[in-house]
Image (cartoon, rainbow, N blue to C red; front, top):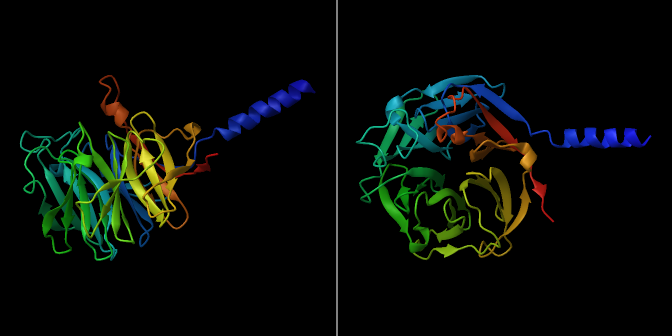
Length: 318
């Protein structure tokens, strides 16, 4: 009888460590970074750090190219415009691009807009002219008026781009400055501020729209090294993607308008995310793109052909 109990316990453990649901799609050497769910057509759009092209993935894992333009070098954060008609794309050449050139490597920073119905490029805004030096346009968020805010992880700045394509420097702060990849994921809060994370320091910052120079660090009891994309769940909680060895998803909550925050939930190691990058949400769940960037840092690894969009299941922390 004792052996039966042990076997039952072992089997239960095996069931418990099953990874969460995945939508696998085949796209050789794609290496996705950004992801955006389009409720109008019930598909996921994904960007590629390796090829720059923009793909479209159905619930069944059928992949097709939406924007097949390798002159983009790399595409990063992507979002669907508030009116649901355009896909905005952070376009640069920070690392990993198969089509990198000396003229674009760590110099290119553009915000592109594509018509969701036709795939036609409607807008191309050059951000690199605003600040000299290295550039990495990484992620974006929209405010209630349709303005886009773009993080530049190498220039340590946030740009503002109006709906008609007028670009300006929105925020620069000493708090953003760090070695390597700095500010990254960004979300807009309806109370009139941005929340921005920093990959290298693991910190979270609050940036008021009314006074972007008064950047403050959100007080959290731990750091999230490798912080990447974020989603605002509601006024009092965000979901944050973390990679670079951690490869987990976290939920943070705040009761004081994001002066402070605490860790409320996390995914499990058993979920086995493979370098998760950014997140999107449909009506029922949050989904994350698995970038598999570790392959690109391993000279012995064969180029991947199959990638996964993975469902996030958060477990409350004590």
